[in-house]
Image 1: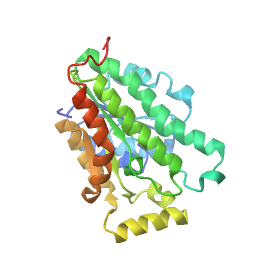
Image 2 (image 1 turned 90 degrees about the vertical axis):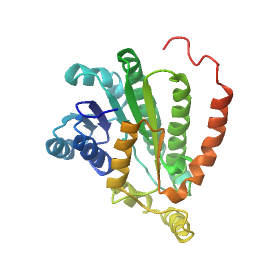
Image 3 (image 1 turned 180 degrees about the vertical axis):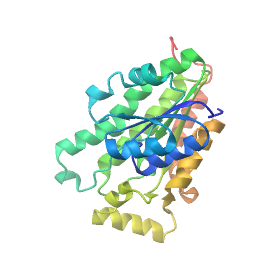
Length: 266
């Protein structure tokens, strides 16, 4: 997909990876609608990228309901949706408040599913589109302290595999982004604030199984993946084995489903 002039919607765009994604897509000539709840920070990113800011709390189902329709009414059809918004509340599972669990599941999983559901019919009807799901290597192998976060990312990756099956033969692309810690970001600081999680990462770093992923490189590779229609972005390269093994059963299922109708009404 040539991104020049395309309408790209990025959630969680006020800082961190979301802001870097806004820069990367803007550099390729995309028109941006940027969604986040932090109005001041969002305005700053919109100002430097020429994007439109839409303030919304995506952990609030009422604000998510009909969001894609409101964006399209205001700024035109969505060509690319980047589901980047997410939170990683780290800590002991038995001490985690139910409200924190609910917020993570709502924002990281349910909102991603709902926005994907909202945007796909229009893309199919118009004959093209792309959805990027920002998942995590935590969806393949989790550490102590991020059990709920890892579960939400496993949901995103697995759901997208199923949606891709239903979209087979239709002009819609789906890319899953799976990385380790993306630095420098507030999310990385949050993950490492819990000592057992920090110790787990340190062990994997010593074993050379993980390395931090630079936020600008992740953003640039994600934009290129949309341009090239790639299924995945995985960083660091040394950790490719984890998502590859996790995804192997999904790919085997895809092979065995060749020739089987994927959906009745696209």
